[in-house]
Image (cartoon, rainbow, N blue to C red; front, side, top):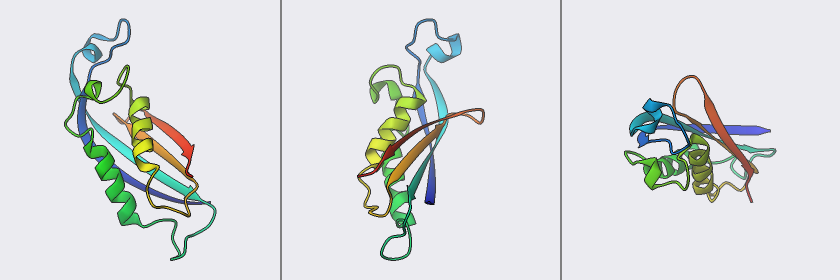
Length: 123
């Protein structure tokens, strides 16, 4: 299986809307998020690569720009979790012209300690 991973860092704000959140998470605060998009496929495309790295980088940058310097509570339904952000970025990237890629994983980090991912098939 071939893999190609690109990453993008951006700052966004949020506050948690779950019952009894930690005090610092209940207030509007910022994170320097890092999003990684990993495209996978068993075969290389016509030109000998899984997909064009510049295309993948541009697509992830454009997807991240939707959330850059924004309040995630205004952009995501429900509690603005990193999991929901990963899914939205996946949805934005799923339409990239990558005919050799069959799977995409989007991983989001809001700190160095943990990450969340969403993986799905590409059609």
